[in-house]
Image (spheres, rainbow, N blue to C red):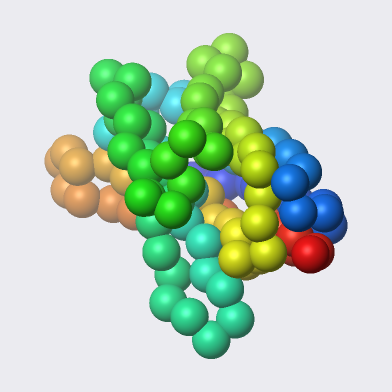
Length: 118
């Protein structure tokens, strides 16, 4: 059973920063892709950032230039550094991990709340 545990959420003023962490119960390189998604009240879950096993990255247009996804292999942890936070970044942030072989599998963390006040 794969476990993803997020931490680092909280309340921050607009313009501030937070760093989210996602610790995995498995070797981080066993996943093809890891990433972060978010879901605001009344909205669908949306992509924030992805990090491939090959270190390729993909960001939502709304987070490019402000958010950075990275990993620390020795700790089997993925991070999301969030700078210049705005009230519209308020959401529950979820860690996601995927494997493609032998079958496609997807795992989610329970989420961590990020609230940005104006």
